[in-house]
View 1 (cartoon, rainbow, N blue to C red):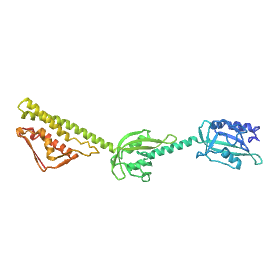
View 2 (cartoon, rainbow, N blue to C red):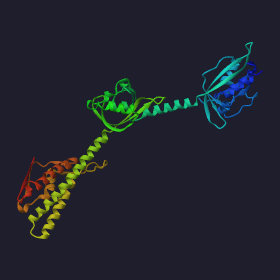
View 3 (cartoon, rainbow, N blue to C red):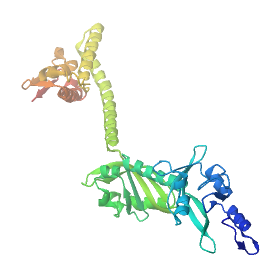
View 4 (tube, rainbow, N blue to C red):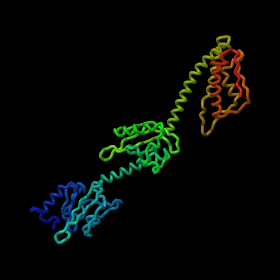
Length: 398
């Protein structure tokens, strides 16, 4: 007996029910009392990827079924089979249906038993709720959450009032606060007083749907020390597309800032040294001209002084240390002073350098530091001081 065999408004009830269920966009099928499929609509065929044989296929039209742990689910243990065998409602059991082409669909069957006038079960109707997109969405959210949590960058979200709503591990490492410390508190707890005016401007841009990219600023660590950061702020929208907050990605650029300062310092030093060397070279030519009698002597004196100047200048450059060998540069303060001052010596005209102090052993970076200091003193003396004139004398005391 068909589960639809009742009268309905003067029309054959079976035809009426079939037309009604065929028009439903959801996957629906029906069985008789022993579980043989007697009806299915096109949506069910699309879901299964196969057409079951009416009156022969039992319990479900799916090619294969699996539990969520990926173990096979026999057809006679499907929710529809349980409902018919045990004469009870079965709901909210999620399973997986595999199509013949290998694709899978997550679904929740909703079998409903049908009864005749005497209360006997005549069959059942099953609506198959496709939850594949929901499962994929949940999986995507979980993957995204895992990525955010494992990010080395600080990823923070806040509402439009500036109240912190989420805080990842990267934020804890950067700012020192745990999520329990800050969630529910204003983001301005991270702001130095001089930067408090940044937050209203950022929130105003977020409300307009704008994105703030690579904004370099300063925030405070839990212990109070400032941190240079690069900040990217993006609007967060709800399901209806309304802006409800903002996400912030903060990256520590303290080392980059420090490196940039070092590069700038090095560049200024290079410019200073280049100008200094040109001026010193001019002074050495004049100095050589005073002490030489002929052109050949002048050329020789200039060449010797420039060679000595090159040697002295090399000592002012940082040593590149081989980790396996360690530092190899070593000298004494007297020897270093002699090398640095050699290009400027003019003993023929009485010019000299007097060293007054104990000889001290110098190694490694100390050689460079003292050489740089003495070279600066010597070039200044050559350009502006005693060595600018014939017979001038420089006393170096320590």
